[in-house]
Image (tube, rainbow, N blue to C red; front, side, top):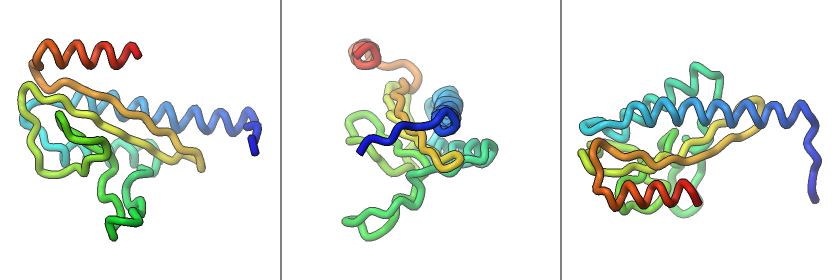
Length: 135
């Protein structure tokens, strides 16, 4: 059944989406060679708290893993499949990282992902990111 949202509900949805966009922009600016995915995760948590937002991935129950997802972000580097767990991996010049992030604000979720180059990347990767973004 389709539920038509009220203006107030749509505004809450917009607010959660704005928080996601703000935090992803901050994370993208922080990506550089030498930073760990755990550091990006900590930054996402910090920025969520500042905005009274709850990261939706953190502690999300996983029926097969036997434990909840530990990160506020999903961090997938290079060829890694989506939903990578942030940790001690150090980003290197030439990597690309996909960061997936979502929050709950006033009972409404926002969620988005970005792919960011780390330092200087192979021109083929730059083209891949460009074409993917356009698509």
